[in-house]
Length: 70
Image (spheres, rainbow, N blue to C red):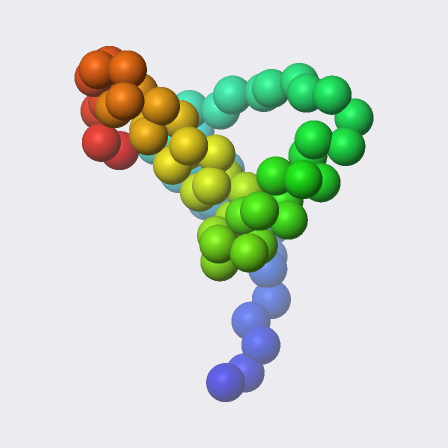
């Protein structure tokens, strides 16, 4: 399969889609924790984003909170 260029138009389209469809959250954690989470996510075959969302969803389900299922 031929490699496609990641053009400025594609970047702009991706940014617009993200803005319309995603919420962003910035978190702070102790030094080294990010590396630990990354290793756990890799071991699970997931991205850090998927891993963290799943962890939050599991906690909310355990605590009886409502999740929007997104």
